[in-house]
Length: 364
Image 1 (cartoon, rainbow, N blue to C red):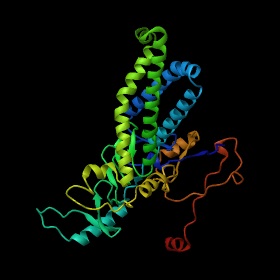
Image 2: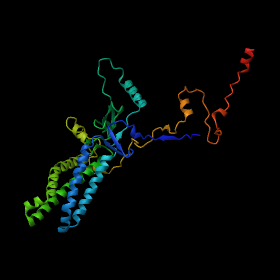
Image 3: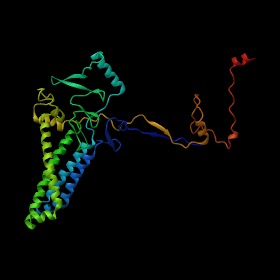
Image 4: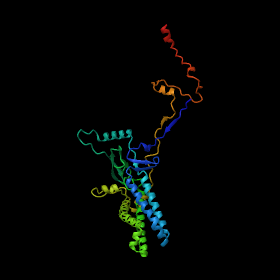
């Protein structure tokens, strides 16, 4: 007697999500597909800090203070934590419209704009939305088939609409949006402090060693220190400048995308409806406001797919090659299964069904 074993395959929603994202750890980690520069970021931070802790920190802890490596470790751990939090989280991707929803939106647009004569360009698909007594335009995304919320934009690299889209950062390997902007800002801020800290104490280390054995001998004996100084020197200007730029944006409650497009400055001369007119309030909203949950439901379960895993017997294999009967058959439980017989010949053939009474009388 063969026993049927049914294997249920669980399919998570992240496996079917459109776009150009990469998922790991069963959908818990979400990144962009282009991760080469992100690995370079990890290599530079880990490599520089490893050299610093291995050589300079031990010498400085003895000569100056044991608090130097402790504070450096705190900055390093905080920078790595915020980097991974920025890179591995959902930036605020907006789900695409389902086919029924997209068809309904198309009907609404056609009802609003009317029939467009052939050869003429259709009017732009825009909805007006009022925020703080100011009209904001909601643009239609032809890829996601939705009207994007205010401040949202479609990332051409990840191929997704992101809520409060700031920019796509290849250095963190992800988009920067509403759900991970605060971690991105804390990352570049802590990285700026870490770069300045390592650069400054490398200079101090070279100065202390030069007093004992000379400057040229110090450079010959510590090539790792020279490499750290060069990396920190060329990194310092870009990271510190980027931190200052985003500090300016946070104070105005503005995004990089809005600043590049000149949404609230330049020719438009439109006041930013999201700014509170106060630096403290803007900083509190951007960096300390409530973090919205992800609307993707990446680890949600789709309808289950069942696949039989029992080995087919000879009788079942031959019967599977024949056309299936449309008449449904009863499935017996294990308690209702008939007893096994010794040979197939002992099984009596099924009796033919009796013809209806009316048909029998007609034949007579």
